[in-house]
Image 1: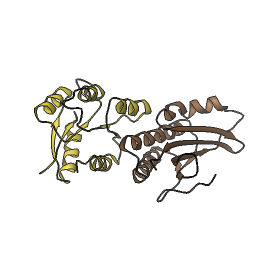
Image 2: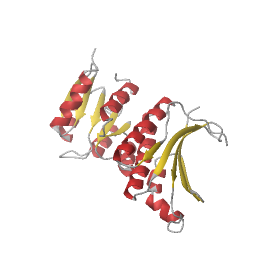
Image 3: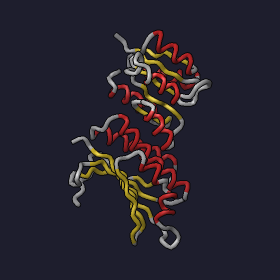
Image 4: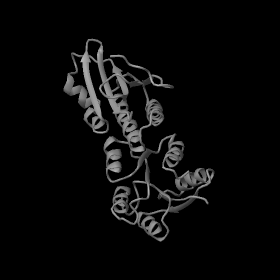
Length: 130
Length: 123
């Protein structure tokens, strides 16, 4: 799957509350620039801050990035969160609880969470009006 | 002609800070410190937009938003919720009762509020 980065985006290491606010602001601005409406901007920004706060509360380090995906069935703004987790200690259900996945998923059009050898990847997706 | 917005906010300090910021953009800002006063102000002189705190001393901002959006006389007025509550269920609740935008009171709050009012056509 080809993924093109959105303009003026960056990756943020989530370590403290300032990072949460910075990430939320970055997502809101990118969502606005991509033409999402106000309520969609608010939803995706809140979803990502929910996950980021949960990461901090769990004392888990993660990197979050913003990208657009123009090659999927529908163009989307995607927030990708990559985190290192110990699979011996955490299964999928525990990870969903730890990240407040269901709360975040309620705010976006689509969300996925997968565990692999290197850790876990969470993707929050909001459809673009193209 | 200057657009007029109504700010429903019980913290005098925060209300004055937001008012000062919006005045810089040419807006006239009326302040109501309770939900009841906000409701009365909307009916006596409908504003171009309402900036609404959630935690008010009498009724919740969610309830006030629902009331205004359920009244055909006021349903068209855009509402921006500006609140300390930034949990997922709080934002969802605000948008579900009809708020056009939901902005957490963080260090970017005033910047986002101005941008929101711009996107709503108030600025």
